[in-house]
Image 1 (cartoon, helix red, strand yellow):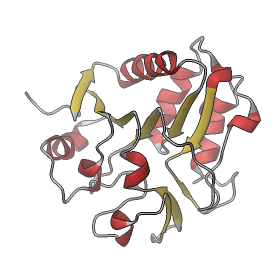
Image 2 (cartoon, rainbow, N blue to C red):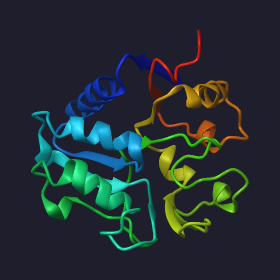
Image 3 (cartoon, rainbow, N blue to C red):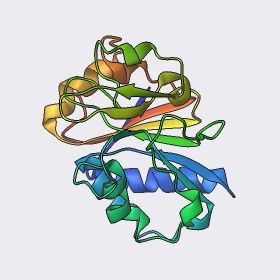
Image 4 (cartoon, rainbow, N blue to C red):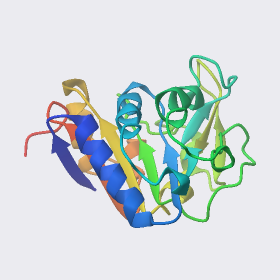
Length: 204
């Protein structure tokens, strides 16, 4: 796992993601993350002149709520990115059922790191950590969720965690050190990176 840090996460992440999209060529298969940090990155991506018709979009996890619910990852991504760029609607695949058809391999999976080290909806100690099916249902106090599992995440060509703020610095250090108690540390795609602002980056 590699750490890439910059003064501004949006600039760092949008440039890095755009390069992965260009490398993929005619079909770029990406799983989006939810949360406040990715929103700013998606808004930045929406300003770029990319081959949006090549994008095929899924989600890494989703709360089992209506698509217009304030907690919906789909709603956030549509507001911040998908409504602003010309990705054909048939190439957008909301995660609303565990029976969703996934690509054989993602070109990129975007992720976050929670304060407890969770990623997607894979939480410390949850049975979902050992799931072998592609999509698993996870019960949480706020909403039940669906999440991609490690067999899918680790088969991706690239996985990128997006992290901001000093409150995440210790967690980033533990993930980089391979602390297997943290679900995020168990992501091992062909290329796995943490994209962080300077505040979240541990000292070298």
